[in-house]
Picture 1 (tube, helix red, strand yellow):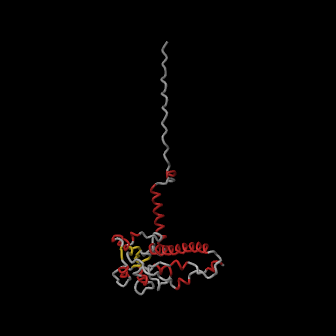
Picture 2: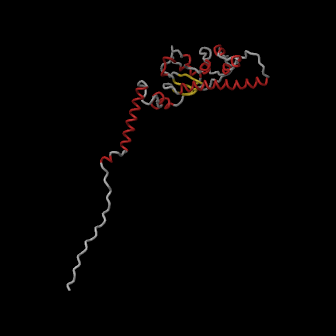
Picture 3: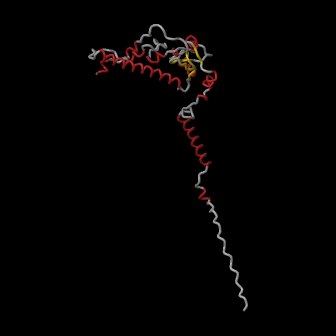
Amino acid sequence: MPELRQRPTAKADKPSTPQPRKQSREEADYGISLLDIIRVVVVLAIGSLGLSYYMTDSESVLWGYRPWYTRWPVVKQWVQGPVTLTPSQLALYNGTDATLPLYVVVNGTIFDVSANRLIYGPGGNYNFFAGRDATRAFVTGCFKEDLTPDMRGVETMFLPVEDVEETLTSGQIKIRRDKELREAKAKVEGAVKRWVAFFRNHKTYFEAGKVVGGEVTGEPWPLCESAQKQRPKRSAMES
């Protein structure tokens, strides 16, 4: 019997390896690349600079912030180092000599105010502050009488005038007096700090150095009339 020929069986198809589906162009457009982020940041930065320039009347593109290294006089002072002057040397920097800087001193710290010679220079409304340490006047407001660094007794301007008959014991009066004296000295210290901060943080003035020597001696400086009138009255405080 003839051998039956077996039909060759077809080879089983090999399972095809799944290929990753290609991302369509529409789907790819939804992705955010690093370049897109950089573009957004650049646009926002330019917009902020432009808005700052407009809002500050063309004075600054950094919302009023001016790094010290962008101001040539400050850089020059930094390179030269801080100055140290005695009171007699300081007197030369009152604007009379146009070749010298114009200095104002508060609490021993020298500030260069040369950028505003119209105010602090000769003929200016505040020329009396130039070339000296007039810290006392900054606190009392007595610009004619108190052009001195002598701060002794200034706290009296914040102490009440005793214009009523006391009903407290001597011990109670002393405790109250000590408390009021501490508060008065704190007010003086706060006023000095505010003026130092004013000149130190000013957009055109800058710190130049320190005054050395010139220690305050002799009788304490008397409290000026205007400061005396500013003192509160005990009767008004208790009413």
